[in-house]
Image (cartoon, rainbow, N blue to C red; front, side):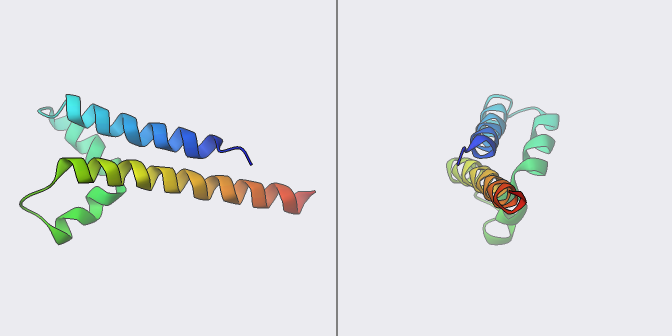
Length: 83
């Protein structure tokens, strides 16, 4: 099984985190990061005041890697059923 979607989604998550880290003072960067970071959607429910950025970045990259892995698994399952 090739992990094309996993690698692409992991790179997307890493790019989101890097973009947020570099452009930390820009409002549009905040909007893009918090719109596309799945853990950032749920993080305020648990800890609203002291957000640990490193943990949020690690969870963002891991969640995008998991999304890519699920896409790869469904792609393989669909290919094997069609043959």
